[in-house]
Length: 232
Figure 1: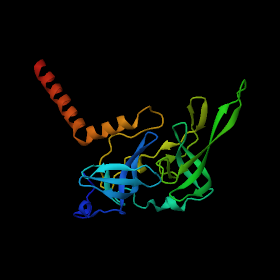
Figure 2: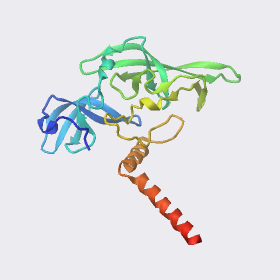
Figure 3: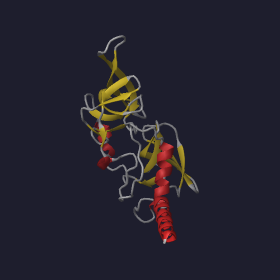
Figure 4: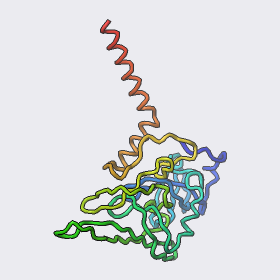
């Protein structure tokens, strides 16, 4: 079911219009923006912002919505500059607060150089040595989010393989990976300490959306009641 927008908004869409759409990147699933390149009878050909690869999305797909419905106020990405701190999904597959060290604009995209600092034990010693990861990422990448929109800082240490970093806990009140503008219930999200995949997370949310969990609870209650009555 689409986000409720202006009546007939789908029929009015044409080439060059902006639209919200779902993307998957590095195992993350979230809403981003794109431009309609072509309108077909039953689908749209869309160029996601920051991505040169065209995608085909059916007109009845739940993965498109009116521009700004899910990605409202996405303009902050265009204002990113050297020295800004962001929540970043780094190369180790974890969210860490990282620093933008450089911005480069190209004809079709703008990329940010992201520096993440992690720590590991030096060989044959107990001392921790700093390890810097640097990566170029498009400013519209799902791997970049506003500072503290995903993470809340604290001093707890967390281990990922041989690397250690200051663990920032997830801010449940500001989920962006499966956010909804119409208070749609979220049943499952990815967490940095869990090995859940985007596919599993998506399926769990579909199950919840279709009332699967309520049906299971109802069956459990029925079995408990029938078991109690059989004792009598």
